[in-house]
Image (cartoon, rainbow, N blue to C red; front, side, top):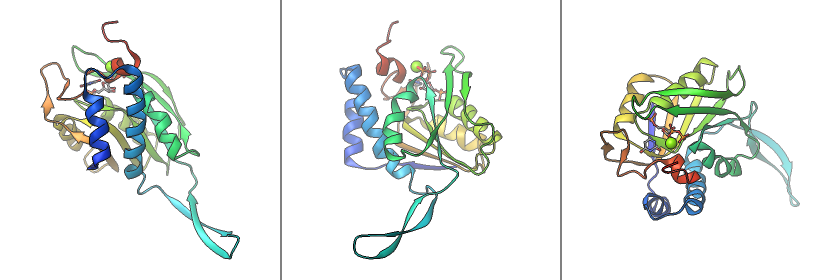
Length: 212
Ligand SMILES: O=P(O)(O)OC[C@H]1O[C@H](OP(=O)(O)OP(=O)(O)O)[C@H](O)[C@@H]1O
Ligand SMILES: O=c1cc[nH]c(=O)[nH]1
Ligand SMILES: [Mg+2]
């Protein structure tokens, strides 16, 4: 597994406002959208392309377009949904699948409540969107599902990661074709499984459900 922490002043600036507990839900959603576009720029560095011939008004030349089969983008509901628009803005021809997953806040184990994506992902590049890589349980289960369907190149885009989650992914997905792209690997997880300093509960902050 490879991990790429995007070191860029614009990313750090937007992440700082996202972390701030005074940031309201509309601003949180806008920043998450902007951040994923910046992270996606790095995450798609190895997106597969093929050569095409074309004519400019001046001459014949060659360029590239995204290869077939098209990449698949999979947001992990709920919070990952807030990253979808920012991603497909960069990859408008990508196919979109969905995984609904929730972490039991007592046991910290993840379970899947909805799956909608192609059965056969052989030869597909897949981009998984989830803002938080905390214990890693959610992302490991999601990526194992994608690999069991044949995905041969999986990139997870996370706004934040915890070192504990990164280590667990490295152990559990050893040798798998997986890259994690994130804006920050934070300090640690706290005793209730939240990322420190983190940004709190991404889904609640995105959809205004804190205390609901
Ligand atoms: O790495 P883990 O320890 O598995 O935790 C990370 C997961 O927790 C959050 O989802 P949550 O279960 O809160 O669902 P939600 O997006 O519907 O709020 C987050 O969006 C990740 O999917
Ligand atoms: O810090 C955390 C950990 C898991 N899920 C979140 O939304 N935030
Ligand atoms: Mg949540």
